[in-house]
Image 1 (spheres, rainbow, N blue to C red):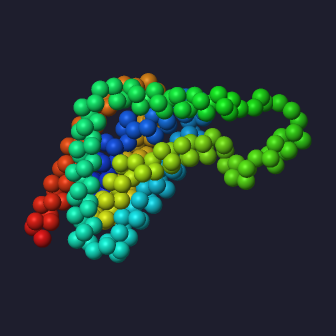
Image 2 (image 1 turned 180 degrees about the horizontal axis):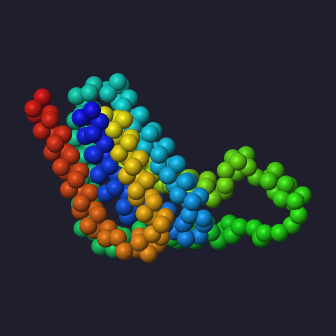
Image 3 (image 1 turned 90 degrees about the horizontal axis):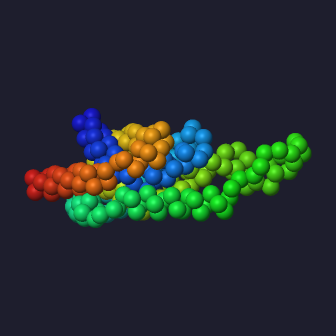
Length: 229
């Protein structure tokens, strides 16, 4: 039970500090301004939950492929590396503004390329349009799929995904999944409900500093556990 709580608390803290002000956070906030919030929230959360579970499974399987001693050492290095990375980001100026502008520019380009269709026409036209849609969009809203794909591929290879893999390799994976999902839900809900105004008011520097310190603390704790054992 203690290992689950430890994995849960570490994963929750790491996820919140990693995801606030992240590209996917900004993407969710901007998408929620242009599309129904419920569909955006469901799409983003579904992608993040899938990504969290996949990352935890990879981390859980790692000790079966590599010795637990080596996975522990790799995890320790990852924590220190991500800590230094976050601290470096905190020292960079205008990081938040540039990231928000980058995400908004990409979504604007996508919005102009796919402005949507004008409502109207008869039932026969609607049926023919539905038949021409991709298979998945006949059952899921295109907005849901858009939010899912943007979030999923935005998180792929991200710092938080790699950290989740390392954490699941070193802690109880069930606790890591629960903490990760709760953290993702809190951040994504805040982004969707708060919108761009909330996203633009978040101090990326403070978040990056807090995340960097947290990763360094995790690294020290992992290093000390290695020395003790």
